[in-house]
Structures are given as C-alpha cells and as structure tokens.
Amino acid sequence: MKKTILTLLCIIGCLAAAVAQKDTVTVISYNIRYNNPDDGDNIWDNRKANSVTMVNMEKPDFLCVQEAYFVQLEYLLQSLPKYGYIGVGRDDGKQGGEHMAILYDKARFEVVEHGDFWLSATPDVCSRGWDAACHRIVTWGYFRDKQTGKHVYCFNTHLDHVGEVARRESVKLITQRIKEIVKDKKAPIFLTGDFNSDINSDIFDPLKKVMKQARKDAPVTDSKGTFNGWGSAPNNIVIDHIFYKNAKPMIFKTLNENKYGRNLISDHYPIKGVFGI
Image 1 (tube, one colour):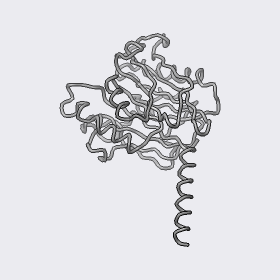
Image 2: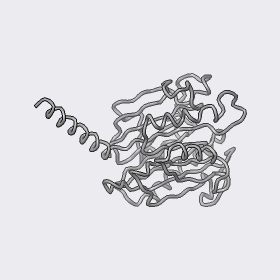
Image 3: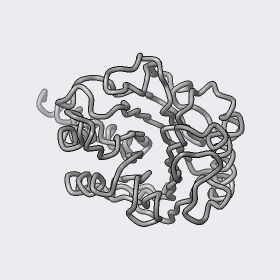
Image 4: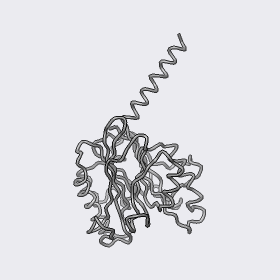
C-alpha cells in the first residue's frame, strides 16, 4: 500500500510539474561579451563551456543574447542542440558583427513569424542611428507553443553605449514598433536587452506606458547589479532589463552565483525571469 501511495504521489508530482511548465515561460537575457581576443583570461574560448553550463542548468525557453558574433552563436547551437535561433548580424543584416539573437527551445516552440529592425531613422535597412557609436538592432519573434497552441512574442536588443540621443530615440522606436508588430493583443510579450541605462532614466517613459518591469513586479526578485566589468564594477550597476506584458512575473533573478564552473562567464551577469502565461 505504501509503495502504491508513493507511486501515485510521484505521478501527481510529475503531472503537476508538467502542467506548471506548460503554464510558465522562462526568459534569460544575457550579454555574452563579444569574442574579444584582448580579454586575457576572459577570452571566449576560456568561458564558452561555462556559458553552455549556465543554459543547461537554468533551462530557459528563450535565451536572448547580446553581443554574440556568429562564431559564438555557432558554438552555442552546436553545444545546445535543443535550441534554434533567429537573428542577423547588425553590421550587414547577415552574419556580420554582433547579433541580438533569440535562441528558443525547439521541442516546445516553433517560429510563426520573425524579423529584425535597426535602431535608426531608417529602421528597415542596415543603418546607424542618431549619435550612436555602433549599428544597433532589434530581433523579434512570434512563437507558438506546440503543446498548448499559445503564442508568445519576444524582442531582444542592445542600446548604444555612447549616444544619449540614440538611446532615447531607440526606446521610442522600439515602443512604436512593438505596437505595430504585435497583432495578437492577448499574447504575452517580452522585451529583453542590455539597455546601457538605469531603469529610472526617463528614456524609458514611453516604454513603461505599454510594458512593465519584471525585476520590480516579481514577488521573488533581487536588486543586484547586472554589469560586473570582469569583477571591477560595483554591484549596483543595473543596465540589463526584462520588460513584459500579458504575463505574470513569478521569479526574477540575477545569475551572479559562482555555480557554472567559472566565477564570471561574461562582463555582464545573465538575468532570468519566470512568468506565468
């Protein structure tokens, strides 16, 4: 009888976990640090396996990376075969330069529609905007959950680190484009990225009118810094953010624990959001 009860409890637990998984989405935003040969001990080859360990341990449905060169994406995709990706290089719309790619769990989600636009006055062509030091881009996707039929939008970006006007105008453009792209008004929407801006900056005012902040709203959350500067930065620089709409934030976490086999896997800590949908 005890064995039967234990078996039933185990089955119920497994079913509950399966239901919970169907009703939640896990999103990670990760500035992966570009493949810079001048990074000394922190070069990509020394930490790429640890980035894979992080993904395998945290199990995101969507892994939104910033600064990834195509060679870095290739390594991630080869090492993480359960994931597909969308996104193009910001410098040529193909494979040139950094990607703001979105990796997604192929077993659970399929791509219905996707696209990219540049953060500039001419967003539909490869271009540099305003006073930006670099080309900047947004990659977005509209995904269907194969099991439930539910749909999810995901947007990923990286704002300029120099141009103040560019950051301000980029947020305006992103807000406008989200309104234009999103046709399924009930679907959850996620916007991730390295915004090179504190959340209290007034550049976010247009965005905050249409989306909310996961870090602020999740009942389980933290206030840790997201930029570590390879250990040289104070633990209060929060420039990586996850915004959401039509979802319920459950957990927000800055992944700054030394548990992936290396103390620092990038000069930014990944941030993770778990949402009810």
